[in-house]
Length: 310
Image (cartoon, rainbow, N blue to C red; front, side):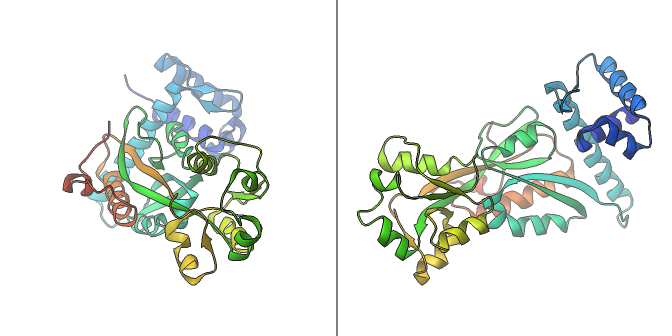
């Protein structure tokens, strides 16, 4: 079976733009011509690829989008080898959680951007970045999921540790007896957004049982969240590597120093990757294993990136 390249490109653009009308504008086609290409592609593969309402890929469409991305990446790698001085850049999209981007992944992203690529970072909660990968919108992602989608592999890269903190005056006013059930139900916590389940996990581990109904502020960026806590409007969880200087200076205090919460992270990438995509994966894993907390039993094979989690 051979694919029609125009149909593949049309399928990709429809998903990128989220609209048949916008795809027609980008491709300089009529809307009906775009529909016809998609219909012909679906007839060719014998499967529904796009849900028309909402313009989202079906599972079969996700698999085809993975193929298109791998094909473009392989082509860019081949052109780069034939013409090393070519000015074209490979488009690379990576899904990463905001806390990683605000701490260890920023330098990683800059290193990747130097690999003759045009880099797009898609930011979402660490428990939801895998959906971006599964939809075919990225070539790799940082996620808490240890099981990879079909065609991908998940490799452990280390853990991020979080510290529950507040200003000294906030802690003195609201947690005189420490973090107890009564005060937790009354005192506002600062969370990233409504998808953020980390605070609930922390409270469950701290108390030994889950609770809900406590007041919450949402500040959907790591910097804004930390600023809110530092301003004294609530308490919350912050990556230890981000907040440690403020604890040392006395600007913030750890409310539960014996109850830090650790989140294991995995790098998901193509099982069979072109050389340029593999180079990007190598950069991510090497930098992550230097910045993140590694298990004491980590073997040399795991640290050099040869271990694979099936």
